[in-house]
Length: 94
Image: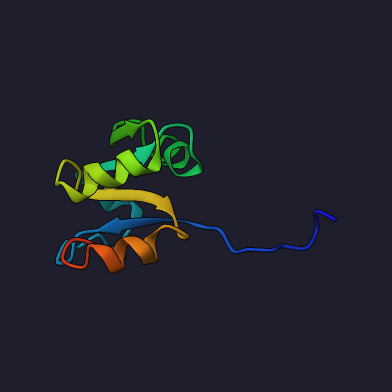
């Protein structure tokens, strides 16, 4: 019952248009908003403890921090990105 996937899930970073982030090592130069305890936040923490991670209580708060300019990047689930891009075109890009 649990061996057949029913949906695609992956972690992804969202960046402002015009911001050049060509590899994960470049992420260290930017403040990243991510919900506490998520796969994304744990992976970012494990990659480099000195990253500037803005840990929020949930994805909605992390998205608000990113969209308001409090963070340059937003680490989230790929399922959330299309709607966010549709509603906030000037700020959101993958």
